[in-house]
Amino acid sequence: MLTKSNTLYSQKIDDDKFEMRPHQISALEKWRDVGKGKGILALATGAGKTITAIYAAVKLFGKSQSLFLVVSVPYQNLADQWVETLKLLASTQYRVL
Image (cartoon, rainbow, N blue to C red; front, side, top):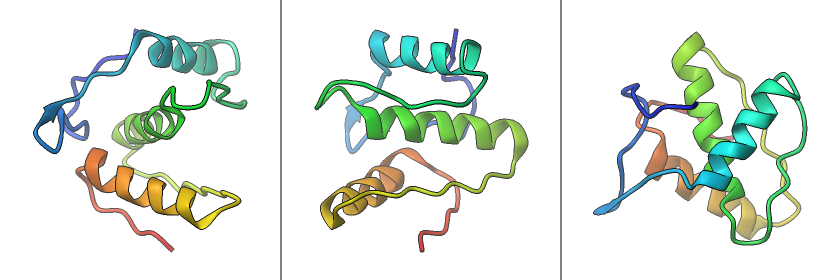
């Protein structure tokens, strides 16, 4: 099971407590165990794909202390959503190009 034990994980978004939902954890476990860390994260609209993917990236960074992540989205508002969510969830330094 994925845990929230490392210091790179933010326990709050603004002043609200943050916890991964069961369907998000299940998706990440399948991505890790079945896909061996490869594949497409397919969740319904509003199910938290951005947060789930960022959570996985933060966990990967926590293990390796190195990560190059490319996010490609078709619309500017989705890119803005990624940047804002990164600011809220990732307590480490990151560079957004």
